[in-house]
Length: 306
Ligand code: SF4
Image (cartoon, rainbow, N blue to C red):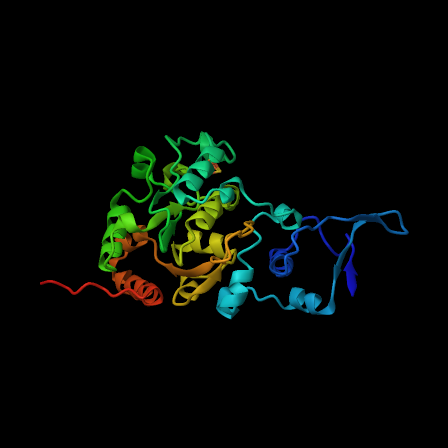
């Protein structure tokens, strides 16, 4: 057994170290151990040290954690999906209030009420008209997660209702299902001004609510639309070329599952419909991604009518 003192554990953890620690903590979670403590100790020199016991294997993990998703197996990708807010990795992961409710529609309502008139990140004061929570079947097998609301979504209070939303509807239809059968949400629930990309801090502040929505809906497959959604959900940085074309094992970060029948789901990455509007040549690639998802869900595409 080894121990890392405060001098070896900087206050702000390196993302890779944070990922490895979170993976270890989830390993303990899987064994039914949920309680972790920061344990301040005074070392002989009088410095306060946060001592964390790790074994050699864990040390090896810390040293060898890959940087890009292309190098990760799906199992490892699932492991890195844990640590979005670093302060949370040592906290007790308690059951969320909605987890005592069996009706997913009611559970989602509890999350929405918990969110309230949210002012948790700066997006609340940058011109949003309303919070765009999420829409669709609360028991959906398939969930789409985008980046954030645009002007149309901000106006209507529903994700993916503008031109990109129309294209998403067509993509869903091409899969042989309707929009009402899936659940649709975004990483951030308030419109970034000028449709800019949400900042990492905004994503990290808002996404715990999305994680709770995912844990309620319990989809079989999540499709992350675009790089922001993919990188936030998987807590990893890689190009779309590296992220697409495979499944990742995914569990919502910071949620302790209370359902023995749902222990996470598959996650696939494809292009955001807004990107496909700008570069329609990539629609064929997106369709390949959706076909991979359909295969996983045992779906067959409807026959083309001419
Ligand atoms: S984006 Fe999310 S965290 Fe930020 S203010 Fe809106 S609801 Fe709150």
